[in-house]
Amino acid sequence: MTKIYQNFMKKIMNALIIFACFSIAMPTAWISVASAFLLFTWIISGDYSEKFRVIIKNPAAVSVMILFCLYLIATIYSSGTFKDSSTFLLKYAKLLIIPIIISIAITKKVRDDGMKAFLLGTFILLSISYFKWLGIIPMDLGLHDLPDNSQGYLAFKNRIAHNILMAFFMFVLLSKAYFEKTQWRWMWLIIALLTLIDLMYLVGGRSGQVIALSFVIFLPLYFYGRKAYKYFLIAAITIFMLHKQLEPFMPGRLLETSQEISEHKSDEHLTSAGIRLEMYKNTLLLIKQSPLFGYGTGALRSEYSKLTNSQDTLLKDVPNPHNQYLLTFFELGIVGLTALFYTFFCFWKTSNIIARSDKYAGMYLKGVILTISIGAMFNSLLLDATEGKFFCVLTGLLLSAYTQKNA
Image 1: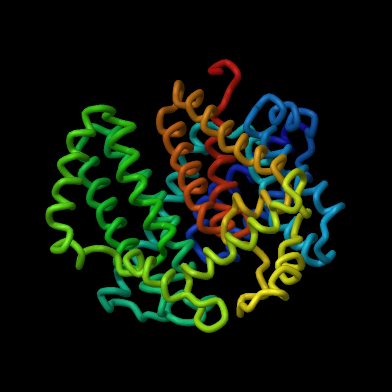
Image 2: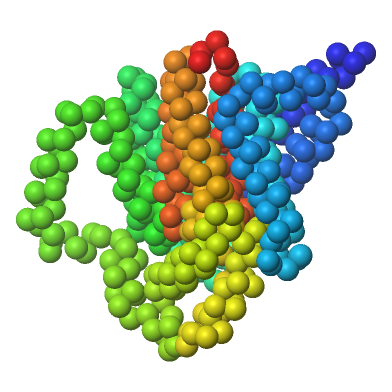
């Protein structure tokens, strides 16, 4: 009877994982509900000894548990308010999704179905963006959680989250086009091109644009090695010679970055790029005062306020510096920052092991790691609902392909 019950619960959890993958690109409430039901089902399904055995045998799962434990410990000595520290800890708790999914020991079929579900959800998001641009559907569709339509042709997500998802979507499509030597590869390439156009011109999220451009450089180098250098050289020379003519084709918000920085005035006029640099500078000043263990989870708002009280700036209330590396360094010190880097390193190393038996899963895992590690330079992605759960759900899904036999 117990075996029948556990098999039944495993089927439910597998279905919830697939639904969670699809929900990443849908309204935020969907992925929140999917995560909550997955956690509840995991708890009542029992068989904890087997689950923890699977987690312990997976180095990537262990690295995430260590990182979360550091955030948990840091709430004890946090200099922030109880509300801030507990709120931040709850946001970091999404990291536990990774070992939870790994512990379910899902099959390759579930992994493949999960990725297909994610691709379907993201394709729907892409389609809505183009339909809005073409005027086929109203601009306010799916924008109930956003203040206005000024961020571009999007739905369900703000421009940062939208473009980060699109950048990874493009990565997957280009990888599929390389691996699949069939007529389907042309369809993947066409959709990848449409995705690049969408995130560069229809939606102005700069983080996703930088990530996408990084992929345009990374993928040819990764797949073709030295053969790609000559093409990059030709492209670089062409861009240099025709940069004036090509300037109208550059994404507007990327071109505005340097202007925003120069126009930023702390006490008069705040700009998006200038605000980030100001936050980075002040966060580094705070880090210098407590570099080893940091100030604790959720402490930045109170410490930043103390620092800026003596500064002539309009920017006073800063709960996070929009840089995950600086935030982790601030909260957990060099110990926590090392743990974060180790987690990314461990994930990457595991992706190479997974690729021996499943080249798709190994490659997609690399894409998730690169998406988050690059995006984390401009946003505190582990805090964000969409980007954080995108990272946790998909890495949990793909890391489940690890087996010690392949190590």
